[in-house]
Image (cartoon, rainbow, N blue to C red; front, side, top):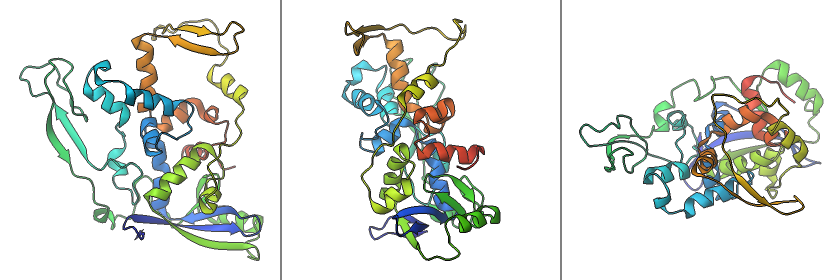
Length: 327
């Protein structure tokens, strides 16, 4: 790990670039950068929207986040309910605190509890607010000190991955150990044995550049090339028919007894070409707002490539972890 000009920590990535096409063929890095890539999957959707300045381009989530921001606290059960949607807790936060370059800017972690004697609220909360049972203001009982990266410098293993000598990261963010079975085919495929049109370049990525990479990974399969050349972030083509079929598969008219149906009233144009708005109850709003608290990895696990029809580098990061293969 080194430090950038602005004083922030960085992780190094060596890029192998096709000079003629100005395209990243693949990258080589150690565990620090791979840990940061894998940490993307732990981020709640609301955190991603916030980090990207409500310009994440993840469907309608930007507008959903703005809706939560705009609503008065009087519309929520407690102040903590609004806070946990705008700054949802990362369940892997203690691990992410050990990253060489942290993506989430939440630096301190707090634990609160209701101070009223005999109150039924025996559980702890990560958010300050009003107790749901007795309306008392919760009290801070523990302040976790963020892990100093310097205290884990001597740890041979990474945060999420073991200390392999090197990893290979493709432009579409597939990740693989830099073994001979991986390297030799790459050397032949890209002509690296001759190195006539191949340029090597080392990038030092600070938190700003990592967040830029996250934004590209959400919508593109050429994330590293886009980051290197500073291309405008553009969404790769998505097959919406495939997305709709994947999200709503054909199934028999059976009702799962474990779930209750949520009913909404749709108001649409007479020709059924578009929905104007929907009249809903609190149960539907709870479900929609709850999307902001979901970890990105859980969403990809639930819907797979339907999220972006395979056009997202984050799909490939997930496949690299679960062993689905490369390419």
